[in-house]
Length: 378
Ligand code: AMP
Ligand code: MG
Image 1 (cartoon, protein in one colour):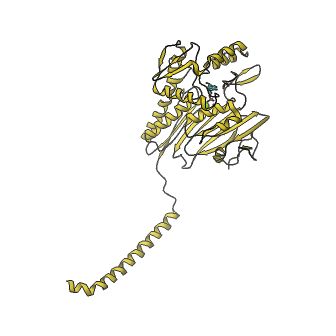
Image 2 (cartoon, helix red, strand yellow):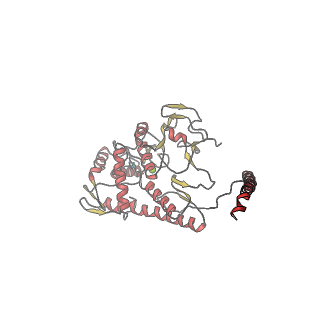
């Protein structure tokens, strides 16, 4: 065998090489053919189902939930869990509900420890930190001021100066002590209002629930504040409209992949006294409704962050843009309808789809349609 193998060896190997060469060429040709065939075919569409639901009675506003998943059952579960996450946050944190945790804290006497869930303590801690980060512009202890302005709106009369002074004195973090598992008030009159943060937290919780249930993409929108992730229904990024605060149309359209977008403004919620609109956002430093920025839109990774900064920038205006943490982008409308300015951070501008409205990008002028014109869509 050995002797036969020796002479045949090279021949066999040569044949093998030739045969192998032919096979390789054939395989390559086949691959090229498959490649050519593939490029001429549309890419295979990933299979997923999209479910949309608009549950009612959530946080006193509209709600729209979208879930994408491999099958209907998973998408349905994602929607159900997202909805119950939102309802749970509202039940715990609404200051409108007397038997919520915050409702009970607000009516508790000074010195009594009110038990709070871990979620409510987390939100209060985030709010406490935000008071420092925003130099006092975001302050959830302004419950007494909020109530004073609510009553003023109902009576159609500006609050008396001494009522405002009293409410300002009662609105302070010095009067709320956070403890593990609860909080203690140091004055009977202290009140907490999580209206500027709990919705953002709830949206984050709802989105986390969708992911946990196996959704491959989703969007949670509560009253225009929203967060999206993963696969969008049309396969591309999620499109988000930014409303024009002075007109009926949209100011701009954003294209985002994984982000939270929150808008604060006095065009939707305000009280009218003596023919003048007063914002529902209060400047904690003066006790008066904020007037600087009628509309602010903030983009951040988490909704709780975007929610906080949209409210804070409504108070701080242009100056607040310097305080924004890394990764938080904003657009601020300053002034009145007839005499307004638009400012945005470069990161915000980068997420605009189509022509950007006229404004200033951190000191850089740019042209575009005026603010009250709806943006043409490409
Ligand atoms: P948003 O619409 O998210 O800006 O939240 C506004 C709500 O937050 C108001 O209706 C109040 O409940 C509350 N709020 C008002 N002013 C402030 C403030 N300066 N800091 C924190 N929360 C505020
Ligand atoms: Mg908000």
